[in-house]
Amino acid sequence: MKKIRLGCIADDFTGATDLANNLVRSGMRVVQTIGVPTEDLQLDADAVVVSLKSRTIAPQDAVAQSLAALAWLQTQGAEQFYFKYCSTFDSTPQGNIGPVAEALMGALQTDFTIATPAFPDAGRTVFKGHLFVGDVLLNESGMQDHPLTPMTDPNLVRVLQAQVSCQVGLIDYKCVAQGKAAIQARIAQLTDQGVKIAVVDAVSNDDLYRLGPALAQMPLLTAGSGVAIALGTNFDIAPNDQAGTLPKATGFKAVVSGSCSRATNAQVAEFITKGGQCFMVNPLALDAAETVINEALAWAEQRLGEQPILIYSTAQPDDLKTVQQKLGVEQAGALVEQTLASIAVGLCRLGVKQLVVAGGETSGAVVQALQIDQLQIGSQIDPGVPWCGAYSRAIDAVMHITLKSGNFGSVDFFTQSFERLA
Ligand SMILES: Nc1ncnc2c1ncn2[C@@H]1O[C@H](COP(=O)(O)OP(=O)(O)OP(=O)(O)O)[C@@H](O)[C@H]1O
Ligand SMILES: O=C(O)[C@@H](O)C(=O)CO
Image (cartoon, rainbow, N blue to C red):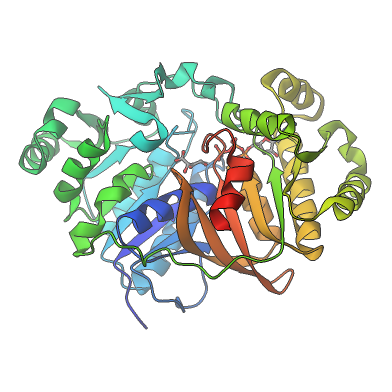
């Protein structure tokens, strides 16, 4: 068995590919697994990202799954561990980021870790402990209306402190600007004060490159994907063109979108405006889900060809609220996810081999329905979103798939992504 260097645990599937993408950018060869594998890794990789679907589950369940992932990664020889969560934090006071971080620290017997969702390439910056999305604070970014994890407080020290029993501190931008020695001195100071988790400011990739070397000996990192851009060198690996090579793409092209984020709404609107063929799934019609699935696939069968088609449930906040009030937030989410996942499998049976999925939870449901166990990470389409190569047991075929985080991607992502693969 070949040993891996870095073992990662991601709390959702799109988040896992985002992290894997940034590790590839730093030169590492990366495999993403869907869930915790039961066997040794077959592929050769420098880093493995185990994707869980734990972002919105109860803390004790997220802890159990994360510890299981850690245990498997330890058997694969990992020297350092990385707990990846969302760049918009996506964790209310009842959330599980804090409990998972504390449990992993306990299992690794380490008394200090960092926490930073900063991902400047995607506009996520942390300044004085406050998370910004683009030019606005987190709680003004649209995340206050997230269907599952509304974020109403941008102060991450406060948000994280509410989730943990240990003390949370801050490594601020002035310290980060001074680089490795200053950051390590600050860590020593915080440790003396009894702080066990420090939120770290980062407003640019340069900040992340200054932070990276200071983390080389830290057993556990907790972060969004941004920190990963600076980790390759800690393992004597330099950025290179080979890390993200995939086989040539074949088959029809389709997009399945269950994300209701601002970015995805704009991408759906752009696709429609530009004359793209699309089919809307109405959640209020899903008491007859089987009928809707059959209608969607019959519609698709007539249209699959050169151009990508789009099947979506993406809705604006007001429409989303109406549906949630009628069906319940969780029930609506699960029903739509399962419907879109069945449609995705049906599309692949019709010959789709290039599939874009929008939304983390939606991606989780689709990948599970396609029975994909591992993703080989290819090249980046947009910050945080790579194409991946995968074998689907459900359709017994190799395919290309990209899992787009709700908030990621340029406005023309639903067409651009396929052009990148051509
Ligand atoms: N029209 C709709 N009405 C109610 N719920 C919906 C509708 N469309 C999608 N959903 C649900 O909303 C949730 C969207 O979450 P998902 O993680 O897929 O997207 P996201 O939050 O934008 O992405 P990310 O987690 O990557 O930021 C899913 O549970 C999905 O099933
Ligand atoms: O960090 C992000 O924003 C994404 O990778 C993600 O986790 C969205 O689900």
